[in-house]
Length: 92
Image (tube, rainbow, N blue to C red; front, side, top):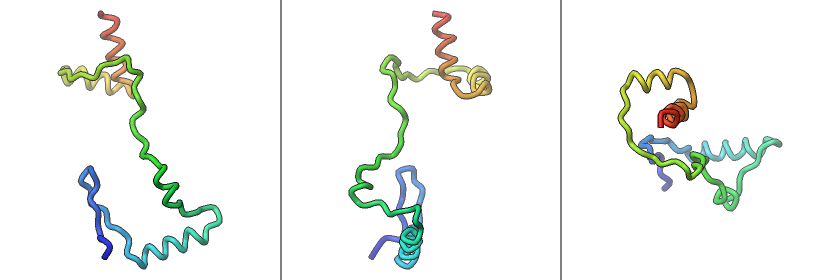
């Protein structure tokens, strides 16, 4: 018997479709000329997108910074960690 749920690495519980629901999904895919079902071989080649590789020139550390400073950098938008790095570089 097929399990009805799976637990993800993050702890979320996902409900799997029943055999009847799965059959309707597959029929919908087959009826759509712009869609096709992925083969097992194609699926095996797929990878989850992940964080891009770093440049290799940076070292990951743990650093305690005052909350108000972090909030100010975050409020200025994406790239806040890069801006902190630039400030530290200018000071060094």
